[in-house]
Image: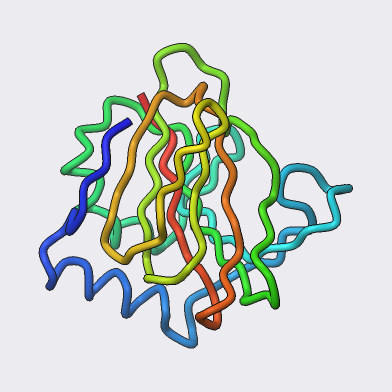
Length: 160
């Protein structure tokens, strides 16, 4: 696992953040986070998904991130928005994909007391804006809600 603080320069980050936090940015309700029956909900924006042929008109917004990640082949890019809760809620350990040799990256859009936790050693990565972590896609991890901000937003990248 690698953690990179201040992944983008301030201007690049601000452009992405302003667009995603804009009133007109399209968010879609997803019933279930790990499965439709898990009782959790989040809002998502699918920037790209190679299996469903999704390609958002906002895809170009992520160009500075994509260039720095040096991606060979994209699987999916998805933003997740979790609304503030009264207590921190974790959503269950999972792997985004099980492809051998793939990478998962998480880009944090805002600072809050939510986090990403890894099952293997209970490592906790705090949500801090403009931070990116990347790791082998077979590492089980879970996200959480936050209690100190109105919402928590991350962008997940799955790629080779």
